[in-house]
Length: 601
Ligand code: ATP
Ligand code: MG
Image 1: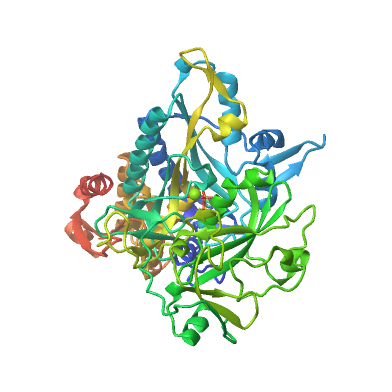
Image 2: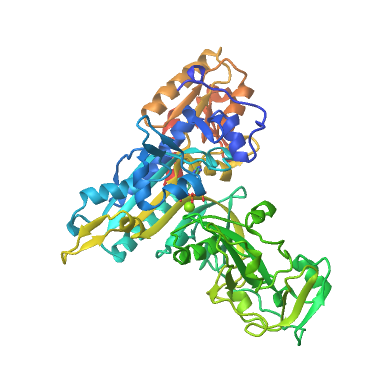
């Protein structure tokens, strides 16, 4: 491609709309253009990158025996009602764009495809003999993200590879899951990324596991906790660790103490001169289940620990049956306005005890009249602890479970693991923290969707059995941008060779120099012919401008037919290192071939 004929517009200044380097650079270098909130046009250079990433993904998927297909983006609401996700996806998470057609039928724009693929399997797979099967697609997904940001990292329209596998048993699922873990590692390695596979939250499905593939970068929205020995890595949403030991309590007898202005643990511990590990704090949450019932949840946890909302949500989903519900729609810390809807009188916030009375709740058809009381494991073994008194300005000290306070029947593990904690597998290892961009997620689903949607096959024994399923997603557009987030310098993007839009760019310093133009044209034709994807900067611009642009757009090799032409040579500059080589014109092709092969192998 000749730059003189391309839609080629670069910006010298950082666009105000962008916060992180990769977003700024992709805008400045003319790869993407914002059309609306979380909506981007992939311009020609970006589209080439996306096609390259897709091709790597495709090759790795095909190598595992998965088959590519293309599923509809418009999805009937009925399918989502069958799986029980219509309400959660259109209301709670609100992530699905929903609409009504002219016949008043409801539809959604696909944020993911479990429902569609399960319907197909239900229709087409009758017998165990047809299993296992694995289908995948590379396609645009739609999600009405609450906070679209960082360009392609969190868009409302983005490209994903999603795959779904069907099996007769867990063992077969595990095998495909392992193959996927390998395929995903291959994809990321081939795309030139530094990444880590981490244990991930599988939501309330439980299942036998899920892993996320995290590209390591400061701008990552996820926190990864890992140990130096390489034995453990997990998303903080899922991570487990050993909490620090509790210090023995200095309070031997139970009594109520005046503790004015101590609504935080910090202030309380300073005032009472005790350790947060001797305090039981009681944190209030409000859950709304999918049948509209609001449940007030009181979590008692050790004072130095924080509740992990993802873990809490999973526990509350397990308890949904107690409230004749299936799922949790919302989980929040109720603010003053939320409290007004159900509080019978004003709550002793900051001073609540594990036994705060149920008559604070004005029960109704929509509001469960009793607190759901949960205790985190960290609080169970405490003795002579400090906790609230249910009266503002007062705490109790020297309290004990099943003496002054009934230990809640439901013990849960909902604490947040954090950097510095001792690892479970080896207490000598401490957890380290890093930021990551989730580019892939592989998942053992089990029978959640097949059971809900009645998708069965006939087993070898003649029984109707639900499919055992797995699903596997890669954010193709997010992956492409995360490569930039990991690889740039003050001059611009440094694409990994495997996913660069072009391998080389020939920058003609002076287009009125006939010899320069002649050599450039010859190399341009020759290189492209031999499969080295090459741009020709034949614009009527100063050499300096051309070199700056070549650096900004991040093409791995820049070829300059300049002063060294006299010696039958051109200058070849490596983008990543700015290293310059004088190479004989006749040897440019073979040299670049070698370099490219070495870089992508
Ligand atoms: P996140 O936690 O970042 O919201 P997710 O868990 O909802 O992602 P999945 O449903 O597992 O994502 O989707 C598979 C992959 O699709 C993710 O690993 C990610 O790479 C990509 N992806 C998800 N949401 C977006 C988005 N809004 N923009 C770009 N890529 C996305
Ligand atoms: Mg995910």
